[in-house]
Image (cartoon, rainbow, N blue to C red; front, side):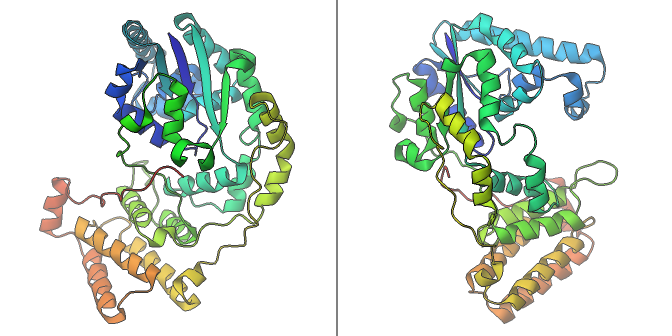
Length: 414
């Protein structure tokens, strides 16, 4: 049985791919492609955790309450035995096993990890293929920055970019050279994260084709919802305000669920995606990695040129234009800052309140708001949130009925 190991990279629709293959698990199994439960579902992240040294996983071990060496050894011993048992079962009916986790890509940066990974897997497979997608660096950084803000950070984009320009994060050729040294260059299947390279512009169909198992991509279910659409300039600004006044983690280390609810509110609103984020230095970054990208293409794609299209000449994003006037934009930012302050610790939002705020944001973004009616509605929401939660709200919260609004369905993939 061969192994196809999908290692990312991050921000190349990895979550979409993972949800898709597990949603179609039965159909793929009928065509000889098996998946793992022991390594984590739907992201097989346990494999990279297993390969990393203990000091790299301190936070994760703490979350799992694995404190002693014996506890850690027992945990991974159980995972290993369950995974090997899965392999033996799949060998009876499958020609291919598919493992997927973007965390695997980063193993190249820690000495010994790739060797440990290869030593763990190689005895159990006839062939190991590495499937990896690459996104042009400036596009990758913009998407990763959006994810960082959604995760609770308050950092300037320029500082974020500077941190990522160290090591092999952006030097794809250096990273894959490390992978090739362990798994063999002929076993690297490197592809570009470009919609026009995929069948019907859908990366999921491209992955199915990589299986080469005879299943028609059209016979699979593509209805599973996708996430991780990047925030626009307004969403980034609102997210940073929320993260500044409404910390993701409280001083005692506990999670602040209100921060996460408000981030979801921003992400699910039309306002959160207004004014596409710009990267004025994108072409400069493109030139900086031109040689490395050309080597990536030459070594792993068989073409001696930079494989990525040159990014457009971005101007600094102007969210004011999207909202109409500078006064309206500043007013909107101030409004949301006050809302975030009011909701920072002691209040709770019901689904109706979240829905009302989302709809109001959409009307502001589209210029269709009714000043008098919407202002009165907003005042009612603010007054409600400024008061201690009512017994009705507390009852809903105890029942788990005061959470965020269901995500909108979004088109895959890019």
